[in-house]
Image 1 (spheres, rainbow, N blue to C red):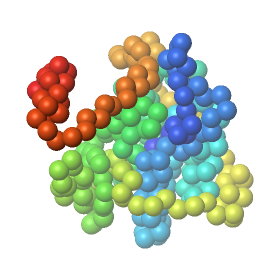
Image 2: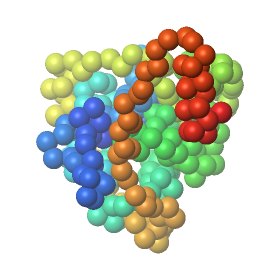
Image 3: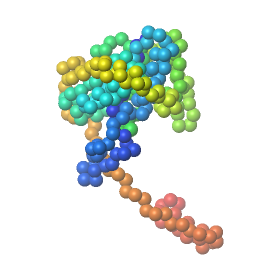
Image 4: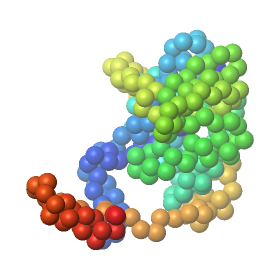
Length: 261
């Protein structure tokens, strides 16, 4: 079985702040990590590899040269191969252009049985890239996967919904997006770390990925972010004491004033 896992290196958003003037993330001094949901996707791939001898796991990412660290972490966890799509031509790509680039790279990789992605990245929260990759490749997809198993040539997955869950199946090749409830990612081992830095992280530039230049980068992106800002802090709440008629009337008047009643 051949599994491809799509990961992204993101800033640790627990320590990220926005520049109030530009509305952009302040990345200086902020550590970068593998996107958490992507780690769940990687763990699932590695678990399948443990259960099915002969399975290979290839990790694919698009990002700047420093994403090499994330790729080696994936190798240290147990991935067999790492491919980093990197080039100035790809900069500024929105989710549609990004999914087009990654799907094109996957087509170049060739045969695959399963593609695993995280539900969404914590720096964008769009949850669009995984499903768009499936659409670009013309394969079925199951999103928000909290449990899965392989039965013959099919994947049977439990998909989390807001008010419950549903069980779905799809023939391979299929793309799944993982949520944190799917598993607990393993730690790197000392031996894995040592071996990860002996392996090659393949770098695919613009000339290596079969894409149309008009469909990538900022110019090829049909959407763009108009403005990014931190919401204004909420005013301190007002406490009303007592349970008499006057207090109740005051409460009702204030709710009406705020158009809540």
